[in-house]
Amino acid sequence: MAFQKAILAVIMTTTLCIAANAWAGERFIDNGDGTVTDTELGLMWSQTDNQGDIDWKGAQRWARYTFPLLVPPEKRQGWRLPRLEELRSLYVRDKKFKGYESDCGLKVKIAPPIRISCGWIWSSERRSITARVFNFQRGYAYTDRMVHKRGYRALAVRPLKMR
Image 1 (cartoon, rainbow, N blue to C red):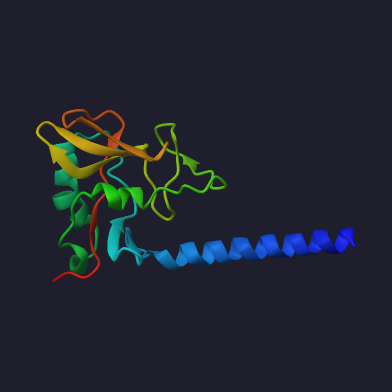
Image 2 (cartoon, rainbow, N blue to C red; image 1 turned 135 degrees about the vertical axis):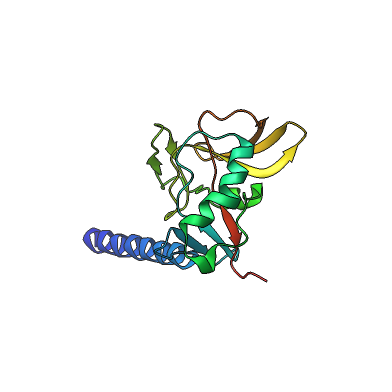
């Protein structure tokens, strides 16, 4: 009887893992060209960040002008920095998800297949000389001066359907 319960537990755990992976796979689709489609939010994300320290104005320029040059011509319009809520939706809160160690040495928990090189991503939200940043190591947002850049990265996003 104990053996049957153990086998049943293994089968149930495996089924749940497969279902969770299928669900995650349905939300994010790797387009194979440096972009990821987010079917839940109707967005297209850059698959990686800008790969280096950047201040807010530089992040904004990278998202609008530099990243679009890296994708196919039909996908070059409408790129921008993400809103805070959009970034927050990428953070994986599941305690079982271990994340990965980023290039700067921080362990981050961001939805695959998006990969970032450090834990802090600039958002589009700003006020005066400050802007909002999302921390993918701990899962919270905070405000910092736009001129700071150490460890900060840019991630580009655009609407899936362009008008």
